[in-house]
Structures are given as structure tokens and as C-alpha cells.
Image (cartoon, rainbow, N blue to C red; front, side, top):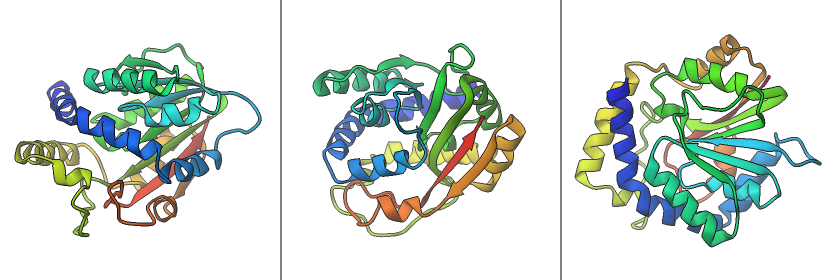
Length: 238
């Protein structure tokens, strides 16, 4: 599994520069409000929260929620992504804490967070059952996990994409690397989100809910930010 993790890290390191620019542009687009609307559906209102963004990439969720006063921590396996997140934070005048850290074994004390948020991460975790168990321990009693993801390694879309779409920028080498990674992950993951629901129950979560309609609410048009793979949102409480 460590070899696979290194392959995943290298793949995302190669995409960091364009990914960083895309996420900054997304923060300035109509998607900003749509993502906030989705997060507000589940986050407790009326108080500032300690929130962990796992697989933060270049910090998109951290910036959305730090701007609302929440105490944000973002972690990512890829050092280049964390460096990009720090650059973007300085540019935006925000101060989340960012760390290079393995999502499957986060190095925080138990019950450190009121909420955990993730976006397009869990499909890249070779040991997802263990990750959910670790995340359960990081939440305080009543805390919530909010996980946006898709069945990326199985659900393939042939929808036409704009010329400036991020997927159009992938090199042949990156496409080959992704295909290899997806094949290895299919060997250790089951179809989602049904598998996630079972794993979360086994990890000790309760009040587990799944929403597929978030995809249509966020991605209403096919633009440069469009995700051709339908996403779902799973929430679960400790």
C-alpha cells in the first residue's frame, strides 16, 4: 500500500500548479456560494468550530470556512499541495493551519475537532475502513463528518467538456498514471457510496445520511469547474 500511496502523491504533485490556480478561481466563482450552502446544511450554526479538512489539496474548504471565522486545519499527503495552500492563504489573508499528513493516520489528539470535511479524497484512500475509524476518534461527541466524493474509479462520464476544463490539461503520462492508480484502488475498494455506509456504521458513526442531489445543486452548468463524475455527500455523527 505504501507504494500505491507514493504513486498517488506523485500524481497530485504533478497537478499542483494548475490545481492551485483552478481552486483560487473557483473561490471567486458562483461555486463558492453553492459549496457554502451545502456545508451550512450540516455544520452547527451559531458558534465557531474546530474543523479538520482532510485531503485539503490547496485549501479550498479551509478558505471557505476560515473566512466565516471557523478554526481550520488542513492536511494533505502531498507536500506540493500544502505549499500551494500556504501560498494561497497568504494571498487571501487567511490563516488556517496546514500540515503534510497521511489522511489514513492523522496525527492529532483524540476528540480534537467538532467537524471533519473532505472533498474528493476518500476514493484515493487504499485503507478507507481504517481511515473512517481514525476519523471517528478525532471527533468530539456529537461531531460530524461531511464527505463529498464520487465513485471515480467506476463511474466514467463521456460528457463533452469545455476546452479550458482541468481534465483537458492532463498529459498522456498523467492519464496513464491515473489509470494505473484507479486499477489498483478498484482492487481494494468496493462500489460507493453503499460501501461507505457500511464502513461508517462499523467505525462507530451514527445518524449516517447520503445525499446525491448535491451534485445537481453545485454543478448546474458544464463549465471549467464542472465535475463529470456525479458526486454524493455522506454525513455521519459521533
